[in-house]
Amino acid sequence: MPEPHPPPAARTLTRRDIVRAAAGVAASGLSAWEGPAMNASAGLRRPNIVLIVADDLGFGDVGCYGASLIPTPNVDRLASRGLRFVNAHAAAAMCTPSRFAMLTGMYPWRKKGTGILPGDAALIIEPGSATLPSVLKRAGYRTGVVGKWHLGLGGPGGPDWNGEIKPGPLEVGFDYCFLMPATCDRVPCVYVENRRVAGLDPADPIRVSYTDPIGDEPTGKARPDLLKVRPSHGHDQTIINGISRIGYMSGGKAARWVDEDMADTFTRKGVAFIEQHAGEPFFLYFATHDPHVPRVPHPRFRGKSGCGVRGDAIVQFDWCVGELTAALEHKGLIEDTIVIVTSDNGPVVDDGYDDGAVRDRNGHRPAGPLRGGKYSIFEGGTRVPFIVSRPGAVRTGETDALLCLMDLPASFAALAGVKLDAGECPDSLNVLPALLGQTKQARGELVEQAGSLAILQGARKAIEPSSGAAYAPLTDTELGNAPEPQLYDLDDDIGERRNLAQEHHEEVQTMLRRLAAIRSRPPKQSE
Image 1 (cartoon, rainbow, N blue to C red):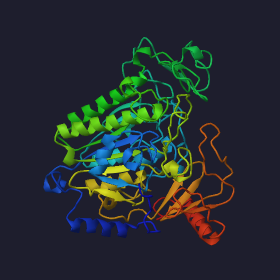
Image 2: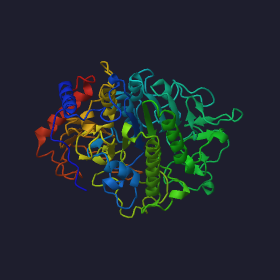
Image 3: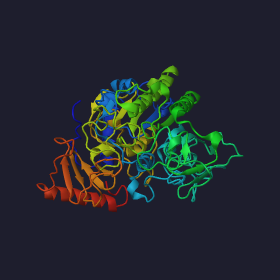
Image 4: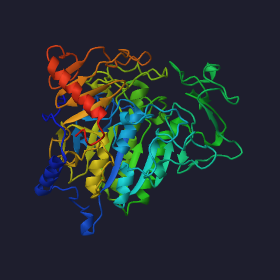
């Protein structure tokens, strides 16, 4: 696979640039509405959108990005009939801030409390604010989220697991939700459907604590003999389904999930949403748990990859993609639907469970040619797979256009003909022409977030000095922190091995001053 190269532009698109690019797309005859789904102003429906977001899937984890040991035929098929981006990024190298940015169109470092959340956190998105789903609702879309949430639930003090859980996804633009509240390694290990815990027996109320033990449930620390997957670090509190988790939980036994069935459960709900809304424009945000820990794929996927349980979890993810696209094809919607496959951040191999993933990698490189991974300010932390497919309306091939998941709200607002008001989705840029494959000019710059910040301008990347650790002490991820500035030329050094800061002192200082300006100014003024 050729090394990915960022575009030559070294400036952020202005609104005038965006208008001109959109006009160019229209003039080319390949508009957002081309094909069976045409402009709503002409009385015809808008295209559906299915956004599939994996959890910790790396840049090198699927076949179309260079993986040779893990079969991913469904993802690869989408890539073969769509557009594969090699310079697409999550806004952050961790899940909560990445997902916050993707839904709100705001850099997560602008808002306190957007770090990795415990499972009992309150909702961190302001109810009623402009979000990716709420913007599409203005255009008449039915909106649903299925899978991982991890953006908090409930008001101050967190959710009432035994009553009505609000505010939540329904208060920030979704019509329907079926979700895992946080992550599969955190309690409570139950599903929430709309505003209630699914299948909860009122006679067995749920209690959750992230500070002190509650109830008499065994823990992984006290009873390792009860475990089918043992922790490698942390993850030794309440045991659910033979796996010890982060946090303490009691009650809710009838509502608890079975890890091996989670992919099937989410996929069934996603397919049902597609089938229910086949006759109207819809947006489905499908957020899988794979290949996040604990990795306990269904038995039918075990041993199906060439690199252990993490690879098997990726095969399971690929199956989910195949089931959703098959549902679209069955309903005759594949040409009416934009399908995106991506990830919330880069990969991690040992993230808390001794599941053999490190031992069984068999030479597989989850981040491909990139340095770092989840939690890292190096490219492996935020550069992710990103595939856009819509036969007849999205060009096929590969592009090095720079974009961020944070740009989806503004881009889909343009797609749907919705005008964003001042202050709405403030850091999101309309990169719709790049999404359609009509131009490689998208973003000119991007701020990347891990423990520190970096600024990417064209092929040049500057990382601010940081006093943080060089490696994550538990996951062995190279974090990219250093006490001195770093400057890399990603055209020539995609692996970020040659720090050019000393020989290009003025350039790196100029870039870091630009980073400081973006950080200090209100959104949109930094453009």
